[in-house]
Image 1 (cartoon, rainbow, N blue to C red):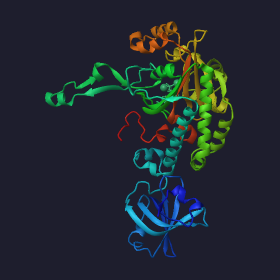
Image 2: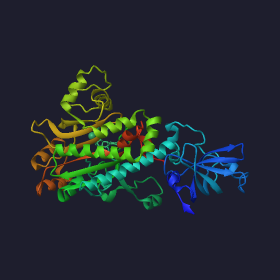
Image 3: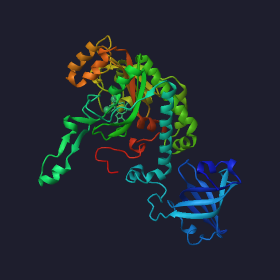
Image 4: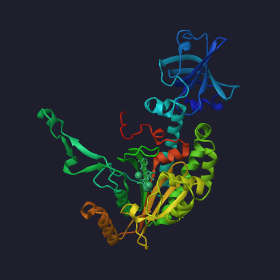
Length: 460
Ligand code: ATP
Ligand code: MG
Ligand code: MG
Ligand code: MG
């Protein structure tokens, strides 16, 4: 008896074998001829396998005919060639019920994504969330493969840190609890302490720490959870998200952009090649034309534009934006969408942003007004990557820190990297969830991570 995943059992190569399939019922249909069709899914692929259970099975009347969506079952039977849409089906010799599912919330076919967010513990059983999970998994595999093939070393940067990398003050503070003291006090008392008496926070980016390894090992990347206490209820912001951050010594901005572009192309072509069934689903149900547009992006060089030129385009396009735009202001989602969806109709790399709207570590350009920054914007999502060449000159860096009221003593170790054998280097940060949004066409970022954390939402 061979244990098969549904994805394998659907393959005609297994016809004639006696197998064991384990999964969950999607639907049951009883035929007048005295047998039932069970559609079984086990998450290994989008599709189900059809199982035929004849009325002469011992538990046909009291169990099989009571099976409903959500029940878990183990099926023994023979894989047969099928005349239907699928290549194979299974003729059951035994159907064992593992778990019943009365009142299963997903009985009804369609629920809104809002409703499904309340059932974060159940929604992976639906087609959409199963497909998102498989695409997300493929992207993560491809990320590690891409960097491995390009000689980037995977390093782990800390989750708890004292430095606010982005300087935006959007950090969650880490404290320790002294519950003993609380219990003994018998009254209200401060029982929260700074982590070992120094203020510390959940990381907003692993970049500064990654730079320390890049300036020793050459090319590194970090890929882990990041946290931002931003009170923004948008369809592209989470309080907890996963970030991919490559950092490379002897890289300038042009190298950085080339890396970002070949990285995105590799991810898209892997997803197109390896997640075909899931992408077909997104193409039909979520975003018409998705596959064709991803394929085009995977094959065409990205367009480039300076921030200054982008502002000119936005000022002269005749569109009325909610947020007025002028040189020196940061682009909002609506501006990024205009540029990618209407102006170039594809991904766009914007470069040379004003230094005043970018963090202290970006390399100041000769004009002293802009920095060697690049953002990659894509249709539907907007900013997906933020990157830059880093300021490697100690004097320029300390001057910029002073202008931004950052204390040198808080960054002494970061400045040391410029004191001991400083080199030009560059890197970028890519939000995993925004990339999953882009490749699946899912409109809301809360629907591409298993347990979305947003303001007021961290129950389970
Ligand atoms: P935005 O302008 O959209 O708020 P940002 O410029 O603040 O993004 P960066 O600090 O440049 O973001 O972070 C690098 C990348 O991390 C972004 O390009 C984006 O892909 C992702 N990212 C940033 N903030 C979030 C968030 N709150 N939720 C999910 N992904 C995020
Ligand atoms: Mg932000
Ligand atoms: Mg931004
Ligand atoms: Mg950014």
